[in-house]
Image 1 (cartoon, rainbow, N blue to C red):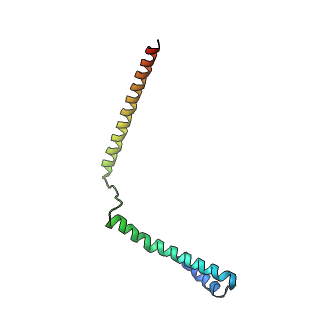
Image 2 (image 1 turned 90 degrees about the vertical axis):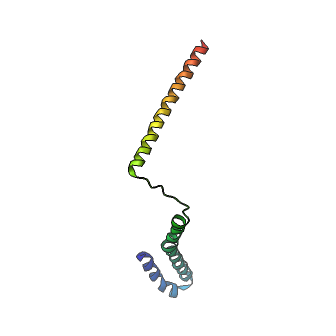
Image 3 (image 1 turned 60 degrees about the horizontal axis):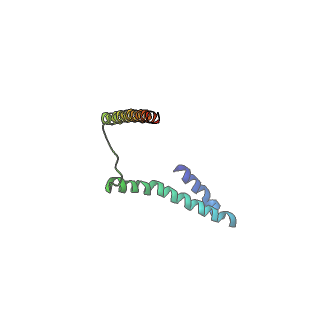
Length: 102
């Protein structure tokens, strides 16, 4: 915010007495910086408040840390079992193919 304020204040004299080349450029920069600062400081928090708090369009899943750990461990266990089953099926198919070709 301080950087934007210093830049805008530094561009004001140039915008007033900078000549035909610098005046439009300074007005564009002053307007752009002001608009971007307004959007960042006011519009983003308001939109966050509307979407997350009021409308509840975005839901943050809040769980206890031990529940997250249990869920991760359960997913890991299922992945290992799935991998073992795939290996068994693959061995069975390979064994079946080799006996069928003989």
